[in-house]
Image (cartoon, rainbow, N blue to C red; front, side):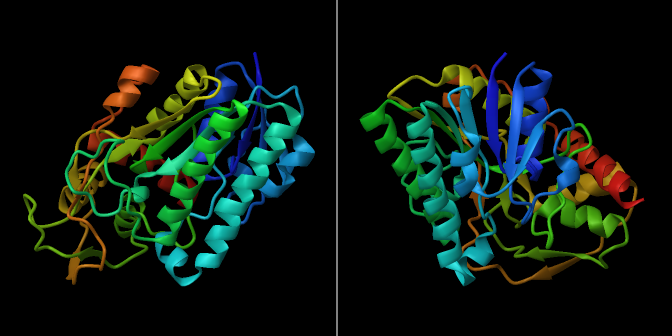
Length: 319
């Protein structure tokens, strides 16, 4: 049994990661400033500290086996409008966290990175050796932290794994997506099924895909959380391992809408809008490295299963 600090552990993904650590028998401290996270999402058995990553120095000591760093500002459009906030929260905050880890002798880090570091892909599926060209300050800040971690590992012996998420969806153990405002496709379509929105907007139906709409790789949040536990085991001193996490399969926007119709039994009207600038036609992960080096095998890969778990969650919190 080990003790871990989970930054951002009151958020959607962070709370599921914290819950999985507890299930595996570990002790967990959640550090979250609740700017976007929810207190009720923090697992009951976790210790909870209100604060941002700058407060990690007051929490960490040599009794911690490692840190899972999921705290970040993460809205692409917001990062374009307010880039300084993203550089301050994501980069400066991460630097302070890593410095605190070095001072206290905590030498294992799993970092929540993103597929946004790749920008417009030159080929798909996207591997970790793909060119990195982020199209937003959000992606740029995450890439900057990846570079920061590489240097820390080489200079100071940090054992680190960066996990580059593609589209995370679904729900687990009563924890699901609850963003304000919501920007992710599956919860937005579910809001239409619930009658909270009149329709779903489809941004572009003239892409070179099988039905003209964008293709994205959707990964169940529970499979994602499993990868974090495996990453802790795989981390090695002085090494920085970077792994993509995705289903390896792509689903179009219209396939997601059809899945919601099947799962919920509700009509989902759609309205076609122009393409959004910077939206790639296809984003699908190659997760071969995670399978080979982490031993990770996603098991909840069906789109209808992912949607059904998300639907159960939104009905529970809405009704």
